[in-house]
Length: 78
Image (cartoon, rainbow, N blue to C red; front, side, top):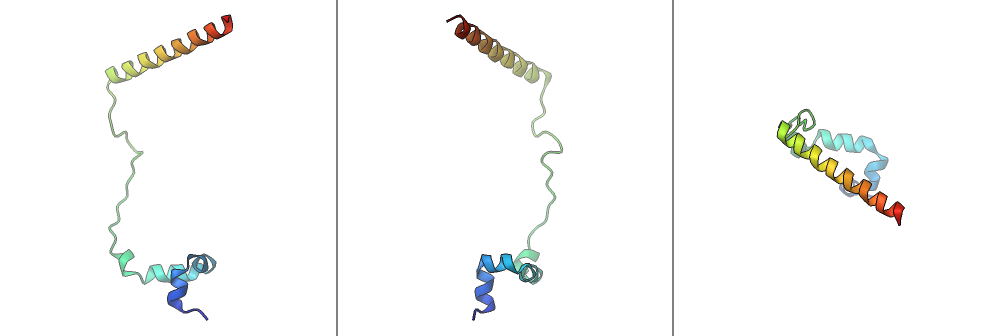
């Protein structure tokens, strides 16, 4: 026979008996003492982009796209 302490340490037995997990969570002082914060990192961008930064990114993307087209042309000609 297994004891409750052994069952609490065995993650596979806890998966088979979710009621024990819920009971352990309800009686856990450590879980109750956790700080709870609602973090929503995707609500707003962390770094605000200026128009200069967006223009610089667009210019870089255009340069890369132009290089890809040139490379394809060279490949097709050879």
